[in-house]
Amino acid sequence: MPHYKWDLAGSPPPLQRHSEVKHTLLRNYLVDYFLTLVPMPQQDKIQLTIVDGFCGGGLYQNESSQEVPGSPIVILEAIQEAQAQLMIQQDRRKPIDIDVELICIDESQNALDYLRYVLHQKGYERSLAEDKIRLIKGKFTDHCSTAIKRAEDRSPKSGRVLFVLDQYGYSAVPLHCLHEIFSKLKHAEVILTFYIDALLTYLDRTNLNNFERKTGLSTAIQASDLDATNRSPRWRGRLQSLLYQRLASQSSARFHTPFFIRPERGHGDFWLLHLSQHWKARDVMANTHWSHHNHFAHYGQAGFDMFSTGYIGKLDDGNKLQMGFDFSDVAAEVSKSTMMAQIPRLLFDRAEGITFEQFFLKLINTTPATQKMVQKTILDLHQLGEILVVDERGDTSRARVQLKGGHILKLPSQRSFLF
Ligand SMILES: C[S@@+](CC[C@H](N)C(=O)[O-])C[C@H]1O[C@@H](n2cnc3c(N)ncnc32)[C@H](O)[C@@H]1O
Image 1 (cartoon, rainbow, N blue to C red):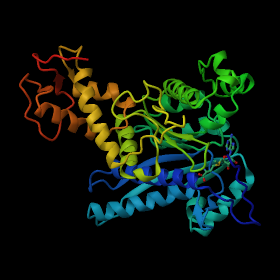
Image 2 (cartoon, rainbow, N blue to C red; image 1 turned 90 degrees about the vertical axis):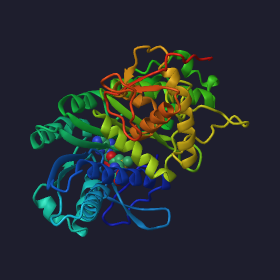
Image 3 (cartoon, rainbow, N blue to C red; image 1 turned 135 degrees about the vertical axis):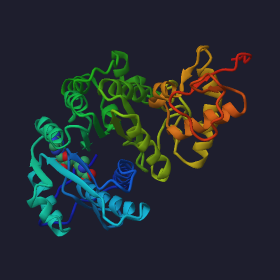
Image 4 (spheres, protein in one colour; image 1 turned 30 degrees about the vertical axis):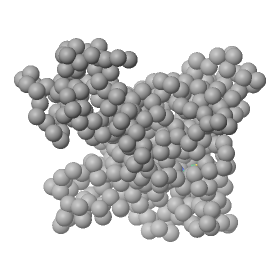
């Protein structure tokens, strides 16, 4: 992956299309995130901290030679966009105060100097002077604890903080930082870039040991996996699946959403992992993917258990990886029909039933579907008599649109299955 150079005497560095896609996702997600934090027009303020741990210089030139913003500017613009949308959607008289302190960390002084210049150009000098935007030079790992402490001090009750960790490769964010974030901050979220292709392409004993030592991750990769003669697209798919599951389970986050961006030209797949402590945060991210689907590819399966069969499910006739799950209308249809078949099977060995909340939380990390999509599928199955939804009193539910967390899902007693 290219390393950017910001130099005040030259033009901004070039940005490839797939990195612009990453910024689009970040912008869309943040707007959706702020909108969910302010459901009521009576609310007049929300307070949180955003840490851009690998912030860069704030400006690029895209493939059409246009200047495009880097992540710190994307974050600041998303705040303004959410404020404008909330004014209109909630018919507000007074604007909502989205009180964000943005902490920008980068190890490159040139990047920070450039960012300061861009922030001045864009009218943020007051925010800089008032420390609403802080620029910090150094390695993310060396400043992680201070940033966590600052977020704790600002929001001791809610623990609301978002870390954008857009590293170059795959080993600059150690697990101990993620543990600290998730153990100390109740509503912490992390968006982590991980260049999986770079790791796999050069995978050998030395690289693997370095990676494990630097991140603290135990990968469970076997010696036979390191044999260069065994490599195939299927090998890549299997190791991606293994690494994703190891990383997600060792990150200390309760919820995770893996999304994958594939550059138009050949190799270079990277992950944008969203890690969070609350299912709603994960649901907002999944919604963002469905509503802005055209840019994102996700090489998983529809329905539940998207990783069980190896996360790149199929190879085409030329033994190339098929285009993956793309969040299109067709993908929504496939998800729906897959879940229609899976849900009754998942209830098969639960004669006493399971609450909707338990069912959803158990499966959330395994599906690209949102809570609304799962709920709608359950209600449709209930209508069709394929499953039974029972309310708190034990009566068959009449719910048509919304399920409560306490609704119990089970199979009708006479139902039998042929698998
Ligand atoms: C991929 S670029 C980030 C781009 C930026 N997030 C954006 O979207 O515009 C990675 C940045 O991280 C910086 N960097 C690399 N290693 C770092 C580390 N260990 N700690 C902090 N910054 C680092 C680099 O100087 C570079 O500016």
